[in-house]
Length: 62
Image (cartoon, helix red, strand yellow):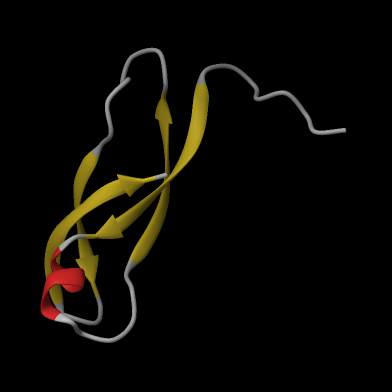
């Protein structure tokens, strides 16, 4: 039986948006948490992409 989520914080996966457009092999993904009551829309954060060797925008994926 699966455990019920503790509180309103959930784990989300962030994936690089620029790497998909440039056709560079590999993917840059990060795991983060967000409060689903406060932040109902998908989040965007600037994170480091080691494949492109620079900071890029990472969006939440489902």
